[in-house]
Image 1 (cartoon, rainbow, N blue to C red):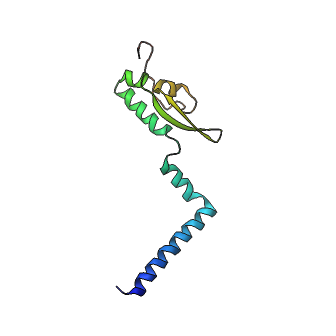
Image 2: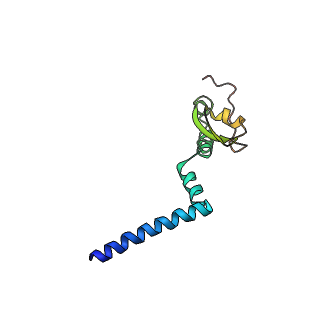
Length: 107
């Protein structure tokens, strides 16, 4: 491969990176995409875990085992250790978590 071809490829990559950078600055779409990948919050994945525990009738894990929950509230990231039952009662998860009776569970 000729040196001219390698230089052209390197320049094309730099131009592509520059275009993506400027496009991101103008639209913000790319940064939103990256923020979602990075996992700024994890409420959705914890809700999925809790619903899986409910469907398996894993009462102890649902009611007693705390999970690290990161959520955004008033434009700040909050982090708490919550059981699925506690998360279900908070406003951050809405009514997306299925209910499992934790009244008789001893943790």
